[in-house]
Image (tube, rainbow over all chains, first blue to last red; front, side):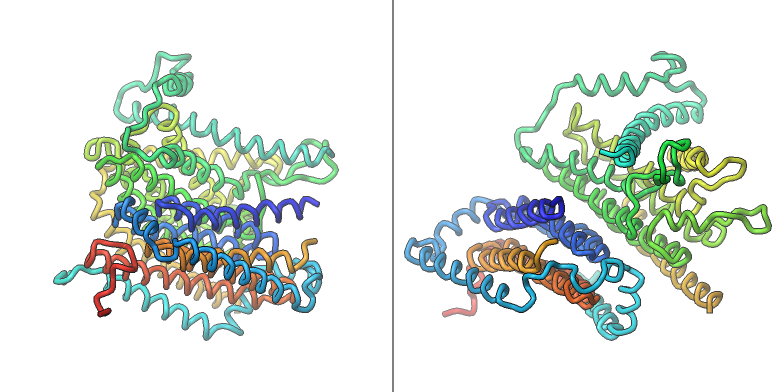
Length: 178
Length: 341
Length: 100
């Protein structure tokens, strides 16, 4: 019973804060609400016996990527009134389009839910096949990561290096040789 | 509600209470030690030997007027100190401070002294420390003032730069111990070589210990890395516009971060609560002694060395400390492989 | 015990919210944030399935998705900074120089 309550609270927080993220005028608030959503998702990962993924999500996503977003929002300092103006004159804001778009979105959600629920074994509680000690062990996770997936690991490290160099080059001012 | 659950809740409450008292004690200790190093008495008048000075400070701060600048963002201005203090408290959650104890036979099974024991405990400390960046950067931005913004940006850039060396130094200890749970790291340091030299990881990882202490000092924005809140250059940095209780939360968060750094350094490098002459149930006394020694070193360093300029600080972090910590990690990995194979 | 379907529904709702954000918002940063929401929804699905099948594959894929998302956010924000410097605007409709 407390498990179910924790699940509902955490998923409620995650969904509510994500819905608020896309509805905020101020991008600063959006970033902070998304950090809250990541925290709730980390709680869900812990409930799914994935403590390493939960902590990695907080360290990398909420602690580094979102700080980067925050810096960019602060430094760009785009005026907020223009954003509101553009949202108001957006072509999708006309009532006919909005109703049609809303109907399509509802159809999408219902289709996704139907597709996911008609998969096999969906009613089984999560934790049916293996014990939680196996799946929650970081040592075994590391062993699998570095033996079966070592190629993907090394490729990811090169990808991050490329992204670092690319970000520095793209954000440089023109004529700046430093 | 059985007794064990109550005792565990009591231990968590005691940890929380100790952290708050630690920050108050550090206020007093800093001013007293600073005073003696500058050849004067520190606080002297309030209570015997000035011991009630932190109480007077807190009462004064609570009675000040709560200001908020007109252009400041309403929600973020109040949220920033709350985030800072929450991250500071949460970081101490997985730090154990004593061995298992049955409280003199009161309990059937021993309970571990520490708020929680998670199998990725070291990473949780690191994760909560990276959450602390938000408090500072939001404080700087939401105050809507030049000094605050500059101070906030510099402080947060410094913190995220030194987090890398911090994490890499921690990883080397995890390699030695073979586990990410801090309690298991401490238990790996029990015993002594030749009966005399304790098996602390500081003897196996001297470079790692120095890197960790330096990165820890930089993470908590303490001297010599406290340029963002330097009183002489930036008015007061990111907390210029804060007053009363919102202001009080910032130094409190800083002192609790210092305590967490010292506690993690004690657990990972100095053997935690293991020490001679005392039975294991009283190991927390040794823990307090070691944490106190590290905190005294923090205060000592602050009032002895001059402060780094901001660009010197960033250069040092990226060009010297981070390569040193990577070399430390690679050397440790090579030696662990060699001696275990 | 919570059925797997519950986790999948949460993931579907989060994905739909992220997709709605990409379509409805006219601010480059909010669009990037909506993309991060979609990636997180997918991560939740992976971990839930990995837990049910009792293998580590779900967690490992999630780990890679997080790393790739971090790299993509860095490069995306660098592009946004470059665009803003050029046009002083964060509206995607302002970058229409190639249209006639």
